Image 1 (tube, rainbow, N blue to C red):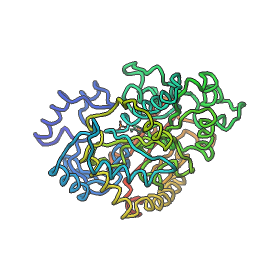
Image 2 (cartoon, helix red, strand yellow):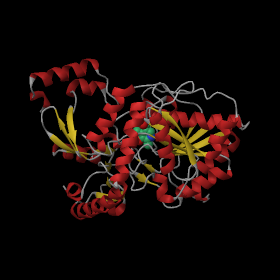
Image 3 (cartoon, helix red, strand yellow):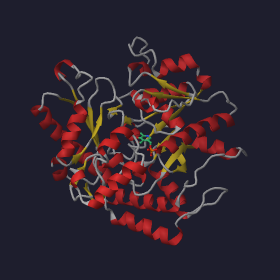
Image 4 (cartoon, rainbow, N blue to C red):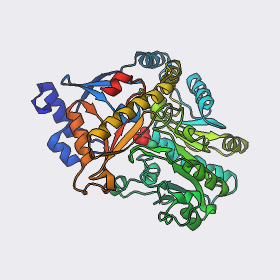
Length: 441
Ligand code: PLP
C-alpha cells in the first residue's frame, strides 16, 4: 500500500528506515516493512496520513490527545507564548507566570490535600521524580533506609531506568537488562490479600506480602495506576485502592498514584483515584495535562510532604531543563480551561454509556468478545477462545493484534495488549471530545 505511494513518500520511507530508530518497534521488521503509517494532519477524532487516508483515532494516539486533533485554541496558546518568551528556566529559583498559574490550577482540581507540583517533561520523568521525592522526604524525616519502591504486575510506569524498572510488563525489561535495584515488582495484581486475606492464592508476591518480607522500614512508596492502561485496561476492583492506601498508611509507606493516563478527565472524573475517593500522597501526571500539544508532566505532593520539604534547608537536587516550560504550561492552562468550559469530563462519562451499548452489541454478535469495561473513555475488552469457560486462546493466536490490524485496515486505530501469555485485550480510549454518533461509528 504505502510502497505504491508518491516518490516523496518513498523517500520519507527510505530515510526513516535509514536514520530513525522507533520506540517499541522491532528494528529488523521495520527494515522489511517500513513505517505503518506516516501521519500528516488531524482534526477532531480523526487523523490523515501522507497518502490522504483518514482514520478514527480510537486511542487518542498514546492515550494523550484528549482534546482531539487540530485544536486551534491550543495552537494559539502555544504561538502566543512562543512569540513572547518561548522558554525560561525554572532552576535557581527562577519562575514564570504560566508555571505558577498552572500549579495553582492543578492543585485546585486535585483530590484531597495535594498541594504542590514539581514539573517534568513527561510521564517517565514524573515517576522517576516521584521516587526521588519520596526518598528525599524520608531522608528529611531521618528514615534513610526507606528507599525501596513497590510496583505491581502489568503496570506501566514509563521507560527510564527507574520508572522502567517499576513497569511490570516483562517485554520492557528483556531489552537492555537495566534495572533499578531498589524497585520491587510485587507479582500480585489486584488481589484480595491487600484486603487482608492471607488465604488468597495470590498472597505470595502481593503488596502486603512484599511489605512483610522486605520490611516497611526499607520501603519508601508503593506506585500503581488507578486503572492500568498499557497493561490491558485493568480496572481496580471496588475497595482495592482504599485497602492499599490503608496498608500504606499503617506501614508508613507513601502511596504514589500514577495518573499519567487517568488524569484530567479520561475516566469521567478529574483523576482516576476520584472514582474511589482515595487520596494518594503523591500523584504523577503527564499526557492529558496538555492533551499532547506540548511535552509536560508533573508530580503532585500532599501538604505534609510539601511542608516537610519547605522546613529543611537541603537542596532539592533534581530537575529537567524543561521543568515548568512556559509554553508547555500555557498550553496546559488553555487545555484545562477548555476541559472545564466544554464539560468534557461529563462528556467522557456520558460517552461511557454509549460505548457500553456498543459493547453489548458486540457481545451479542461475536462469541470471542468478553469482559468489556469502560470507566469514562478508558475502555477495553478481552478476546477468548471460549468466554463461557474463561478459556484463553493458545499463545500462538494473537487475536487482539488480529482485531486491531483488521480495524486499522478499516480506518480505525485501536491498541492491542497481548504481550502476556494467553491475554488478548483490545484497548479503546478516544479523545474526550467524541460525540454519540462518532462513538457509534
Ligand atoms: N505512566 C503511565 C500510566 C503511562 O501510561 C505512561 C505512558 O504511556 C507513562 C507513565 C510514561 O509516560 P511517558 O511516555 O510520557 O514518559
